[in-house]
Image (cartoon, rainbow, N blue to C red; front, side, top):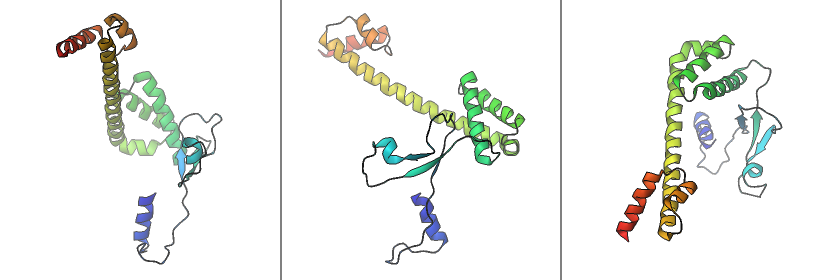
Length: 189
C-alpha cells in the first residue's frame, strides 16, 4: 500500500516532504478467498485475526471477496483457483495439474480468452510457483530434520532409551542415521 501511495504522489506531482498536507485517495483493501465461504466473515480485521482485538498502532480492515454468481474477472480467477486445487489433489504439484486446470477452465469459459492467448506463460508461472513451494517444503523438512536430530542427540546422550525407542519419537530419522549419530556422540565423549 505504501508503494501504491508513493507512485500516486509521483503521478500527481505531490511532494510529501513539505509541510503542506498531501491529498490521497481513501484506501480500499480486499482479500480474495478461493476456498469455500462457509461461515467466514465479509470483512477481516488485522487486530481481530492476529492480535485478539488488542489495541495496536496499526489497524487494517479488508473486504473479503468470495466466489459469486457474477461473471467478472475476479470471480473467474476464484473458479480457476478452485479448479487448480482440485487438479493438484488428483495429480499433485505437476505440469499435468496445470494443463488440466487450463483445459477445464477453457472448456467452462473461465478466463478462456486470457488462457488461450497466454497458455504457455500461465504454465511457466504456475510451474515456478511449484518450484518456490517445493523449495519451501524442502526447507521445512530440513529444519524439522535438524530439530529431530537435536532431539535424538539429547536422548542418546541421556542413555535412557534404546535407538529403536528413540526412532519411535523421531520418525524422520531412520535407525541407520540414529546409529551414525550415536557413533559420532561416542567419539566425542
